[in-house]
Image (cartoon, rainbow, N blue to C red; front, side, top):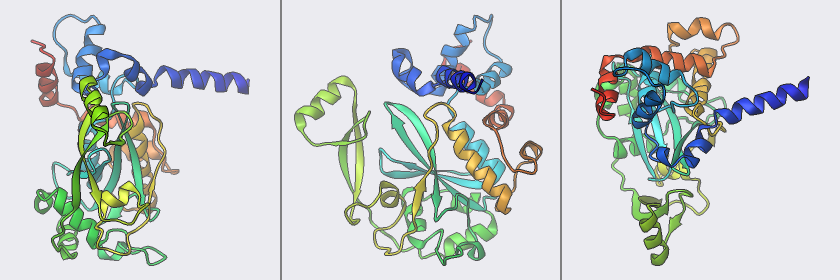
Length: 319
């Protein structure tokens, strides 16, 4: 019975292996949830244009919807956290603020790609995912610092706008109190293979990649000691000698990867009372403080409005 159960679980996992399916399906190589919604809806053979219930069903479909910036905005707003996305291929930072403001903490994610398919993984800083912007919570039990002045400088360099109006007053006071000296990243342009993300220097190989559509114009950050991990190069200032340790979580390479990363945040927020946990999730977490991917998808699905529907319809030429 145990072997049969394991075999059935593997079959279910394979059936929803979005990463493999999108690599094999040439029509889906431009991994864009907006366009995938059109593909998904037309396969359902429904009459008339899509309605809001269809978009919500799409988000709940683990074989179709891949967590994206819509989901990130929902999580940022409901947990009151600034999501800092580390773009590995481009070696730069992107931030998603809670639309209604009031952020009290930071949370780092890595966005990489497996063949053109986006893949999110959570980052823990000195063994913590949630980084409160608060002097009292910024030092760990071993005197480690979670948010350093160099990290703040890098955030301000790549993402200079939005902090003043999206942070809570205490968080903004903490953020601006850090040493915000201007830094100049040693960033230079490079060409990468879009499948492996490796830098390519041979001009003949670069031309071949461009001809096949597999070349990615990007950047690389220098100035760090040899062997420094890519997260530290992107997140930290090279001028700071004591940068924290970063650990990248392992998440499945399918459409659930972002939701698994957010489970790390929700679990830690619930356990340590670091962030407000949305009321809709408190009952679902129970005493053990655990969430499911389906419940987080439901949180995103229920947040969708006619505004998002209009955008999806226009992009797919639905009348």
